Amino acid sequence: MEPLCLFVDVPMASFRPMWSREYQETYPAPPPSTIYGMLLSLVGVEREEKERHVGVKIAVALQDQPETGRIFRKFRRVAQSNKNADPLTDRRPDYQELVLWLKFWLWVDDSEAKNSLVEKIRQALDKERRKTIARHGALCLGESSHMVNEIKLAVGDAVPTEKEGRFLVQDKAGFLTMPVWTDHQNDVPHVETFTLLEPGPLPAHPLEEEKWITVSPSA
Image (cartoon, rainbow, N blue to C red):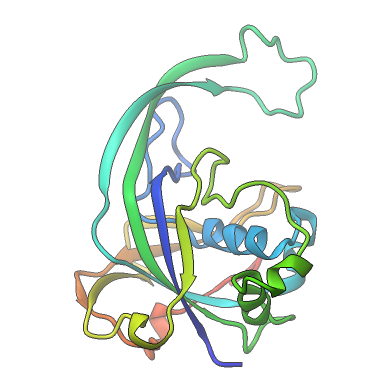
């Protein structure tokens, strides 16, 4: 099946780096594992079944460099599974960085995946066929409060040719260490290093191999 191109608009989001502790900074772009989680939520796949579409490839390009902001909020400091935690002391306020007005193009290629994700996405975005998908909650990118404002198919004139964007590419010398896959049971993520390229022309379909990210538990 031909790769799919999507446009995603998220007014507010935060992507906490793994090393973040007290001050909750954010990556400048959504990690591949977070994008994959959003797509699974869109098509109604639960976390426990996330391997259903393992092997899917994605390419990501920011439309613009998003603005950043900071809020003061209350954080949980112990795992939710810790039943012995004191409900009055396991939370405390701290700062959190946000990316604002995040808009990006997302290409999805499932030619090497276990099951077709492209067809499920088309189904989820079709006004009639989406009725057959069982899902719950709002569509979010990361935290449940960071809701997606718009996600749509880029077809015809909406394909981002003759526009510019910043591709997120795998780069062994890159400064962005991001999770590609998160193991929620064993807490052993598959991480890679990435770089955000300078603004450049956007193709209808990325051809360069380094622009494609394979979502899987291991490299």
